[in-house]
Length: 145
Image (cartoon, rainbow, N blue to C red; front, top):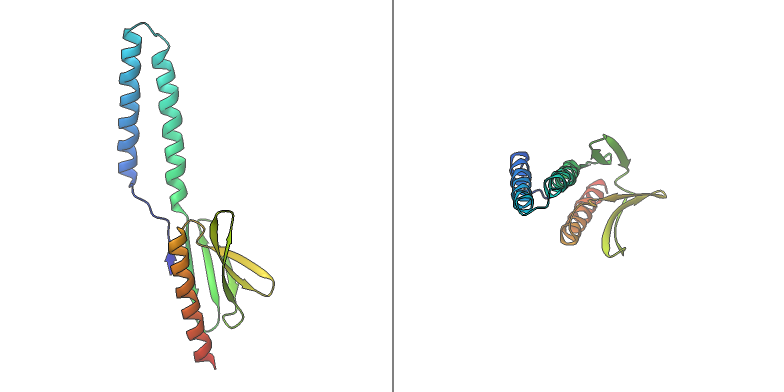
């Protein structure tokens, strides 16, 4: 399974949005400068830069993803970017859905280790993933017996 956050904008769409917002801010600042506020364009440039940086950082956060691989030998969760890989034995791993901090947390637990999976998903998506992982693990355990 490949888990990725929902991303509405493409890189091209993000650039267009930033340009439109910057143009609107500069037009408004130009009108303010025309009426005597000489500092309005400077503040508009600062604001447009801050908004562009904030939107870019938020958009880049959408690059996170997790790949979950289940087979008879292991349950493997690979976190991208960063390539962190965590393995569990499928017979001993438990899938937990805990509530806390105003949201559900989907955890894989085995031998005292816990790993949160799908933190970037919505509660409904996490609940669906919880059911799917439990069913897949039950099938693996049944095949092993």
